[in-house]
Amino acid sequence: MAQRTGDSQLIDNCLTDAEFSEFPGFSRNKVRDAYQLPDRRRLLISTDRQSAFDQVVAAVPYKGQVLTQTARYWFDETQDICPNHVISYPDPNVVMVKDLDMLPIEMVVRSYLTGSTNTSAWPMYARGERVLYGHEFPEGLKKNQKLPEPIITPATKPVQGGHDAPITAAEVLESRLVTPEQWHELAEKSLALFARGQEVAAKKGLILVDTKYEFGLDENGVIVVADEIHTSDSSRFWIADTYQEKFEAGEEPDSLDKEFLRLWIASQCDPYKEPIPEIPAETLMEFSDKYVTLFEQLTGLEFEKPDPQVSVRARIRKALARELPEYF
Image (tube, one colour):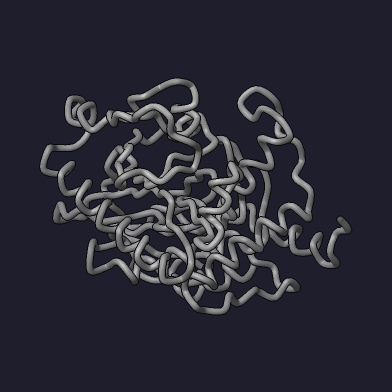
């Protein structure tokens, strides 16, 4: 497949570094660069860095903007279910948020038996495990099969550079990671958010397959949803019309999420034992197109692609100087 004109320029203009010396409290995870500001505020900048199998593997055009704007749509759609951490959006890649006391577990909700990473439900089931995250599974299930009802499969949040670790609800309570009251509320809110996500997605011809939520406590001890919600990084989305046909044929569903890249990598190497090869530009652009398509199909909005002649980093710096002039 010939590389499309302009792909290299778009990839070269990806935002891979959002460290600005003007701001205090810099930290970095796989995708976001963050700053700890006074008055319990945090600045989160979504870069175009792409992670898979617990490592950064590439930079994807428009990735940070798509994540920020998709999460913005869902935060607005779900604020009646759970308050969120958003204060403002200074730039398409940037969100100013309340600084929360983050709770040390991720709430993962699954509605299908699927996945390709070691901690996903299907690989665990395929290895012969029949009790996953405290839930019992019968024999004879197939990959990508719908579960009778959504289940919560929590994970402990890793320290910097670490890995998510599976944990059961009973272990969460035994280890006192959260109080029983907090666990009940987290479970209730997670299932309610997921139900809203599935409802909205179904109206747009999509299946919200699974997702993860992160929560924190605000200054009043109120549980608040944070980080991102129902994005193509944190969730799986399948095309509803073709799901059943693909499932019956034993084929992978048509998807608009991160699984596309995971499957490409897994077809090239064992990502847990071998180096991940360089990902071709055309594969990265196809991946980018999936993220943009998901945004547009979910929201009904047209994704406004930035001017490729303008540096994304320079644009963000200019927006931050307007929003926070006291630092410049």
